[in-house]
Length: 120
Length: 177
Image (cartoon, rainbow over all chains, first blue to last red; front, top):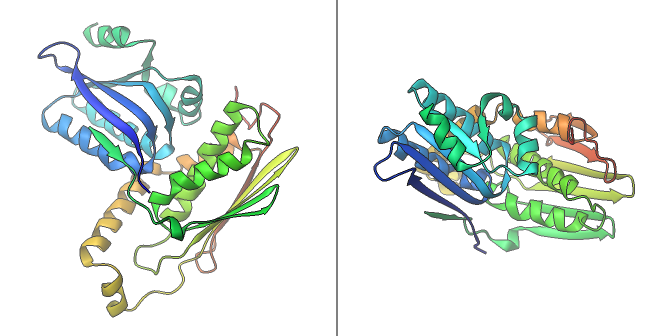
């Protein structure tokens, strides 16, 4: 039994831009942890610390992934960057709230506002 | 970039409809099975919970307790199956998950047959990394999203976690606030 259910796409906010936008899609749980960790490692290896995560097409996130994102947020901020988030639906927002994510993450309505926040 | 579920052996998964309101699933101590287990649980419960948010919260909780049961099995011990039971009533959905305990430590020869050293190392690193990442967040979710929970840790006989959610009210605790 094999099923595809998760994808990652990384792009820049503009050609050659330093801000990377990560489009996630599907269900994020423990089985997707290593793929996400590898993606962050690649970005950090290339000195990209200003990151925006697009959750618009994410249906599910568990606490393992949330924990990974917290760890990566620390790394980004330690290197004078940040991780900003947009596209959380009502259910994901509730999970973020329960786990304390709304206190540590900056969450935006859309991609444009998240990009602008890096330029302020 | 695409990622996909590791191939699983469906024969190792046992789904039993014990009664119209009681489901029992037995599955291997392997994270690859968690997704299919939680989906089976949610499919079963759908007839009893109409509220999508409640279903989502229940799915999150089932995921957490399954991961927890697997995480607490040591890679150095013979892997045991995990049992999850769900009972659905008009006013309560009750879930109980039990791991098989650590069983017995396998001898070096058997250990070497069962896992290569590389696999053991990989699993140890995975579990170490997970502990760092998870750090009590599952418990926080249980506290906030369930209406009742109880944890009985017994590494020898098997640990049991029980929780319940109310299918109708909007509350876990802070769940819908």
